[in-house]
Length: 108
Image (cartoon, rainbow, N blue to C red):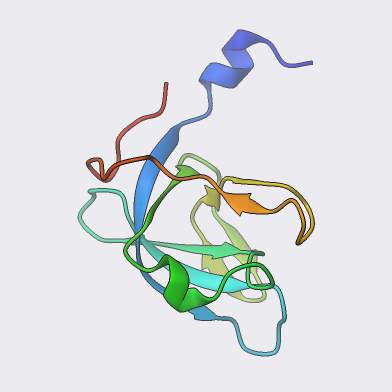
């Protein structure tokens, strides 16, 4: 169990996917460029390629953990994590706001 103080440490923000491409030599990874309303988009590597095609998510908004420590995945720096539902093709779904919101909006 986590405490409410632990949960409050997470910075979950809405980001707009600016570009998306498959990571070569992988079946699961997409490299996303995500606008959070900052000076430059962030690069995020996510294991969602077997569920969505890159062209399907460009321009769409999703929640991301924005204050996650950067990590190298297959030699590519990832600066956050997209939030999604499910763990297989029958239950997988990306979460998205019902209407466009300002990139970087904080989820509370």
